[in-house]
Length: 251
Ligand SMILES: *Cc1c(COP(=O)(O)O)cnc(C)c1O
Image (cartoon, rainbow, N blue to C red; front, side):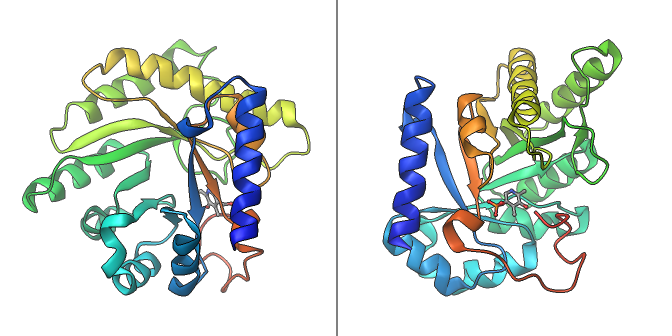
């Protein structure tokens, strides 16, 4: 674990250097889905503090097991969130990266207010590549499509008006591609969309770009990623439970 973490930190440092960025501006999220709490504990001992999970129930077990370390850990929900699990998610996670509708944001807002919690940090998940298998707000071709662009901005404004949420930035999952230019275009498009949204919701710190995984983190860093979500390169290959359960199309 120390070696894997060190290796990723070196990759981050090199990628940051090559694009003239400060590596301290890039937060490493270890994606611990399918791995047990003991793996998270080992990674924490090695120096990792941010963890990403796909499913609320699976995360709950780990977060509960590691409750003694709760204040030192930052938990990120990176998988699709159903509205009926919003209450639980609001209580468990520090960041919800997968907000993709007004209805979901409203549910998060309502629960955070009812529970007396501070405004919940969230990212708006955008489907920039247009792949049907991907979750997220439809954002393919937004730069050429004024109507689509306006729809996204309106949605961001409506979510931004909710008192119980803080919009921290945008999140996307790039398509699996051998062609780095294609992936780069997706990340660049998300960055430009973040800039547009940030300009119309100045009351929110809309600065984060959650993008980049084990296979494309260098490209993501070059395009401005502030949060990278790394699973396999840190924890090894995942052995999957029955298909469909993770809803992440084998990522
Ligand atoms: C599984 C997953 C990751 C991690 O992917 P790796 O290829 O294992 O690094 C990142 N983001 C999301 C949304 C995921 O579902």
